[in-house]
Image (cartoon, rainbow, N blue to C red; front, side, top):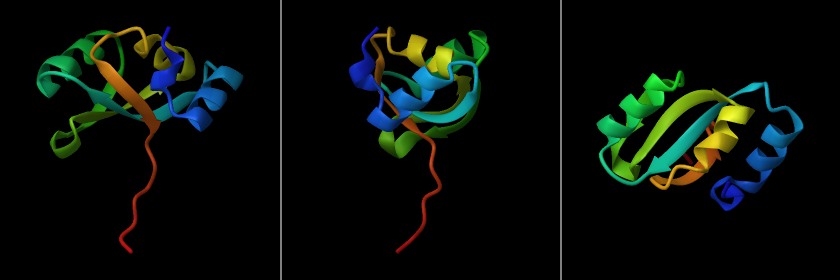
Length: 86
């Protein structure tokens, strides 16, 4: 497990409550469609493909988020937060 892929506050959150579902932004290497398909087959709900940043928005339990760190094509995992214009 490469926990350095998880944003620090997200790591604390998923370790504290591994069964709780969280929204994630997962930055990936490679084809987004291929990666989304792999994650969907694993039971994760992919809600958006963020092509400009090479990432997928999805829902997962804390335990599933931790397991994602083992995948070599997962570059970074961050919480899915609301974004507002300045």
